[in-house]
Image (tube, rainbow, N blue to C red; front, side, top):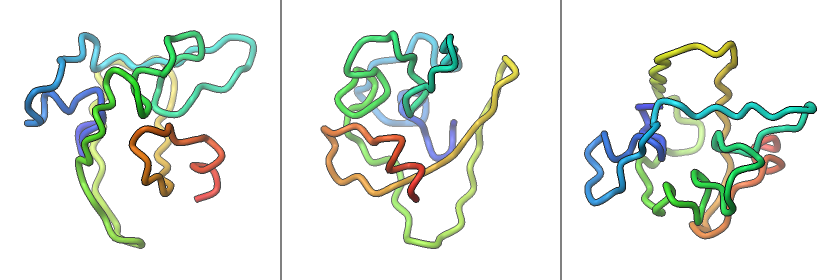
Length: 109
């Protein structure tokens, strides 16, 4: 997602001093057995903390945009290759940069 910049592409979008993401256009959660993927596109079998969640390697705690409740925003996702999946956008309150957001919170809001 390029607008607002997702954690995997922040380094391309003018946020300085960030580690480049080697596969920033390839966030694929392909869980087997019907397991749900964790928020932010990481795989369940990946390292913990998950790389794109709070505390992870690509989650430096930078707030890229701020919005007001009820505000409508434009979102731009650059899909470079389709694997037959879908994009799902959800937000929820999380004021602790060290605590990953939960799916329960995202589903609630």
